[in-house]
Length: 89
Image 1: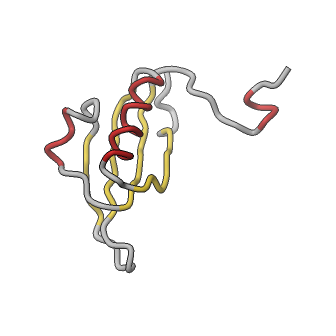
Image 2: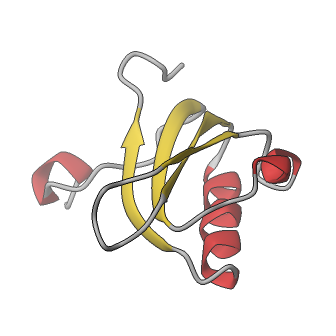
């Protein structure tokens, strides 16, 4: 039996607040299209240009998948996905 802890993978255990960082600019007006996630932009000093940070409550794995699909269609590279500590039900 392979559990998530045995394989070193984390699973989606339910509703939680997630922070997703992508390379590029996501319009702040897109928060409705992104399951209500708050969008902010970080202007980095690197050659890679700005990064956008999306943060908010995702109720299930299908919402997370929808965010990933939107970033794919916008051709934005996902740099980091974090679950905000203490935010899961």
